[in-house]
Image (cartoon, rainbow, N blue to C red; front, side, top):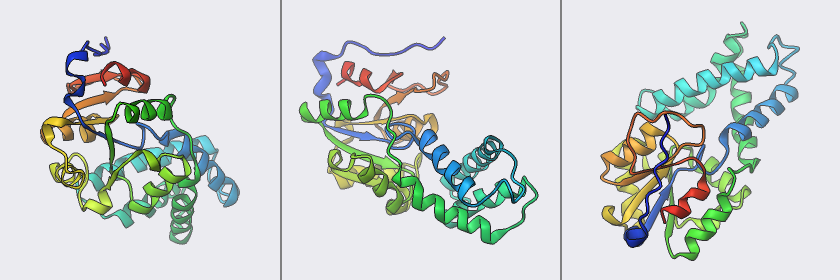
Length: 244
């Protein structure tokens, strides 16, 4: 049974000064934005005529390979360029299409078009305004690519909310490695005991934050049974008002 932890902490609400957010799957709706982008690429490149089955099957295969390769990337087994095009290559191979040129084209188009999407999770702008009005300092720590993540922020209207945006590419590290959190804290000139990590990924955001000595908020949008204990757990962003 999922237990939502929103404790009465008014007395110590200002314990935190610096709030570090994850971006994808926490604020920016990666699932809906990537699915729409891939659907456009499926049509633009006539993938049905090239032997790719239905779009739903294409998306299912892509999601599998993308998740697996991101896991390898976050653990340092592969480089970002390999991640970018091989998720397309492996997806096409599932349909018996061994076309490296097409794979690299799809990878390029995906990274160009994905950041143009601007679907956010409900209450995102509302809660960010609320936090700024209460004088919290907001930052981002994201495993995404530098240019892509900044384009996402601009196109979805999020750029003005964050003082520091730390990416895996820019920091030369990835969550859950302690190095990326230390890098972010240093850039923000923030102390660990006055900082907290807010994200949707139990390993990258929550365990990573814990390893770095930070309190954490698990944003459980999809209602999983958490196997890692965060300081606080919420099921939608508006519930941050009960913590801060």
